Every structure is written in structure tokens, then in C-alpha cells.
Length: 312
Image (cartoon, rainbow, N blue to C red; front, side, top):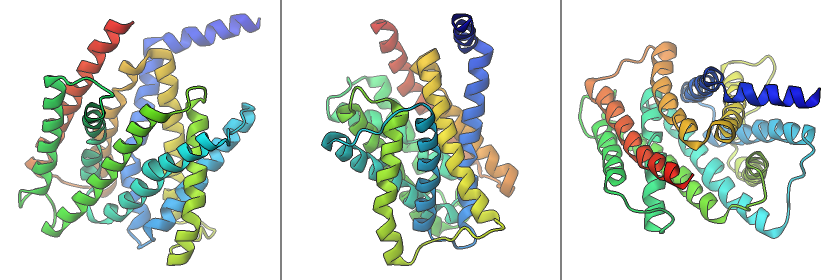
């Protein structure tokens, strides 16, 4: 009977409709985090304090999941160093930068600029000889850079000209995420599952943020009854954990090529959530930047698909 149920689950996982439902759910949900970041910071909540709560809630949820699955967190020297480096590059640094930029940029612009992460990841992988150079993929990187310039340079692209500096801050967050991806590709412990690694990263990053938050007076008390800030913080953390888990699930059941399409959904839905929640209106430059960034992602991802198919 157990074998029948397991076979049924595997069959459902391979269903195209089921896979698309998961992809849409995770992608659209993840795109909402850009608007939730604006909601969390619009009343002046300190970005460091928000980043700390993101780690606390995320690590708690992941710890609960790992406890149910009876997985222990490896704490040897190699794992601890890996958690520390990736925790800062993938959680503490980009989250803080992201929350600093959120009050000053439309949610849609945040979504587009952070879409540069996979393009920067490819560029870093080529420079470090972790991936092979390909002209089409390099063109995709240049398209991503062009998209950012379309946001930052024209006078009509952003609500205020002073917002340009916050585009640079958002790009620094994307660069930090890309650096984390490179470190994971090169130094990830091969026998440890992704959710376990994510738990270690979030836990170490959160513990490292505690003294910084206390020293700067940036703690955000989650006083009951919760308001917009509290619900936004918890919502972001829950969505990040759930969407990441669904992404990993898709990679395991449908392969990385299908799962990678989530990047498009996150970016487009990030723009649409901003319109829905904040009634954001974008200039032609921003819509053009979105189209150019999507084209850049497509070029970088297409070559990955070709290579994956050849290696199977």
C-alpha cells in the first residue's frame, strides 16, 4: 500500500499541470516579497531589525521542517565556515541593502534590478572558470546591464532623480546574491541537502546580526496586535522559505531547466504586485528595461538548457 501511495505521489509530481501549478504559486508568491519589503519599511522600521526578524522567522520555520524530517544540522568546521560566508552573502548583507533601498524605489524596479543576479552569477562563474564562455550568454549579461542603465540614467525612468543611488544599492544586493551562488557552486558540502544548508546559513547569519542590531539600536519589536510592519516581516520570511522549498522540489522532480523559469515569474509578478498594492505606474523606460532583462535571462538560460540536454 505504501508503494502505491509513493508511486501516486511520483506520478503527480511528473504531471505537467501539477508542475506548472507549483511554478506559478512559488513564482507569484516570491514576487510579492518586493512589495512586502516596501510595506515593512515605509513606516521607518530599521532595515537591520527587519533583516534580523527575517532570519529568525526563516530559521525557525526551517528548523521545524528539519526536525520533522529528523535531519541534524552538521556543525563541523567546513560546514560552519560555509554557513557563515553564505549566510552573510546570501542573507545578512543583501537583505539589509534590499530593505534600505525598498522605501526609495518602486517595488517593480526592485524586482527588475535583482533580476540581474543570475546574469552576474554566470559572469562570475566564467571569470573563475566554473563555467564555459559562450557569446550568446555573454550577450545576455550585457542586456541585463543595459536594462539597469535604462532604469538609472533617463530622467523620466524613476520618480525622483535621487533614487538613482538606491538603484546602486539594490544592485549591490544582487551582486551579493551572485557571490553567494558562486561560493555554493565551488564549496558546497556535497552530502548535505539544500534545505539543511539553508537552515545553517539563516541560523548563523541571524546569530551574527544580533550584536550588530543591538549595538545600533535597530531592533524592531513585534508588538501584538500586529500591524503592517509585523505582518509584512513574517509574510516575507514565510514566502521565502516556502518558495525556496518549492523551487528545490521542482529541481528534483522536473529538472533545473523547468525550475529556472521561476526567475521570469518572480520578476514579472514583482512588477504586477507593485501595481496592485501601491498603484505604481511606470514609464516606458521601466517597461523596456523589464523586457530587456527578460531577454537577457532567456539568453543566459538557453545555453544552460542546451548544455544540460547534452550531458543527460
